[in-house]
Amino acid sequence: KHFRLAVIPGDGIGKEVINEGLRVLEHLSQTSNTFTFESDYFPWGCEYYLEHGKMMHEDGLNKIKNHDAIYFGAVGYPTVPDHISLWGLRLAICQGFDQWANIRPVEFLPGIEGKLNHPDKEKLNWVLVRENTEGEYSGIGGRNFTGRGPGKEVAVQSSIFTEEGCERVIRHAFELALTRDRKKVTSVTKSNAQQYGMVLWDEVFQRVSKEYPEVETDQCLVDAMAANFVLHPEDLEVVVASNLHADILSDLGSALSGSLGLAPSANLHLDGRFPSMFESVHGSAPDIAGQGIANPIGTIGSAALMLEHLGLPEEAKLINDSIRAATKDGILTADIGGNNSTKEVTDSIIAHISKM
Ligand code: NAI
Ligand code: MG
Image (cartoon, rainbow, N blue to C red; front, side):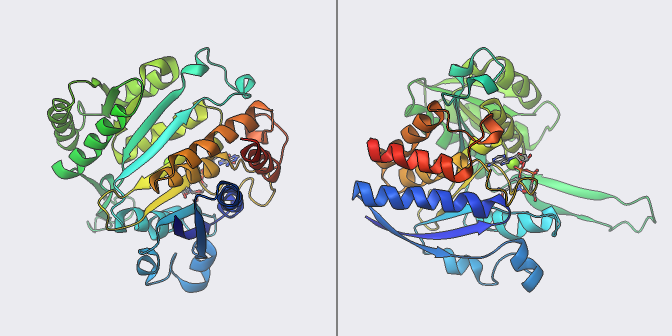
C-alpha cells in the first residue's frame, strides 16, 4: 500500500512532535515492508497568518482534499488570537471535510504509576467519541448588534443539533462498542438544563440503542460524568458526547492517564468524500515550545490511529505496543515524571519497533 499524507505541523510543539511521528512512520515503513508513504508539507499556522493574513492558503482545502490522510501537529500561538487560529485552520478542516467523529482513546500506560494518584489506574481504558462538526462549535452567533452602548454589549453563541448529526455519531459509538471486549456505550448530555438540542440527542440515543440490544447503555449528565471519570473509571467503555462536552472531558481523561501529552485522536470523515485528520489532543504548548521536551506519545499514537484507519491494524498495534514498552522502560518526558527528551522517547519507541 502507498499513501499520500498532507502534513500540517502548525505551531509551537506541534512542529516538534509531528517530526517524531513521521520518524516512527518512516521506520515502520522500512521494517514492515507493508506500506510506503510520501508527505506533502503545508506550512500553515500563526506564522503564515502574520505573513498572509490567513491561517491557511486561500485554496487550502482543495490542496489537501485528495490526500489519503492529514497528519496535524497543533495550532495556536500568543501572536494570534486563539479563536482566529483555531477557526482558521483546525476547525476549518474538521468542518470543511465533514470529519464528524472525533475518536479519543484514554489508556493506562505502564511505567508512569508514580504519576497517577488514583487506585484504579489499570481500569483507565475507554474511548471518547466526540461529535465534531456541529453542537456548541457551530460558529453561529454574533456580537455588538444591539447598539445599547458601552458596557451593555450582548453576544449570542448558538448551538446546532441536527437529528442526522446526532444519529451518525451515536451510531458510530455503538459500532465501536461492538469491537470491544466490554460492549457498553455511555451518552453524556446536559439535557436537564439545555432542553432542546440535548433532549433531541437523548431521544436519538434511545432510538439507536434499540438497534443494538447486545450493547449495554448508560446516560449521564456531563457534570456528574466529570466526577465519574475521576471516581469510577471502571464504569466507562465507549463514551459519546457533544462537541464542547467531549472536548472538556477528553482533556480530563488524558490528565487522568498522566498527561495531556499522551492522548491521541482521530477526526474521521467516514463517508468517503474527504480525508480524515489525525492529531494529538493537546495544543501548541507555547510554555514548553522549542525546548525539545514535549511528549511525542500523543502524536505518535495518532499515527497509529491513522494506520488503523488506512487499513493497517497490525502496524498500528506495533506502534502502540512499542509506546507501552518505552514507557515501561521508564523512558519518559518531564510531564509524566521523567527527564528524557522528545527525541529520546521516539528513539526508544523506534528501537522497540525493531525488536518486535
Ligand atoms: P496546551 O494543550 O497547548 O497546553 C496545556 C498544558 O499542557 C501546558 O502546560 C503544556 O505545556 C502541557 N502540554 C500539552 N501538550 C504537551 C506535551 N505533548 N508534552 C508535555 N506537556 C504538554 O493547551 P493551552 O495552553 O490551553 O493552549 C495553547 C495553544 O494551543 C492555544 O493557542 C490553543 O488555542 C491551542 N490549542 C490547539 C489545539 C489543537 O491544535 N488541536 C487544542 C488545544 C489548544
Ligand atoms: Mg481540547
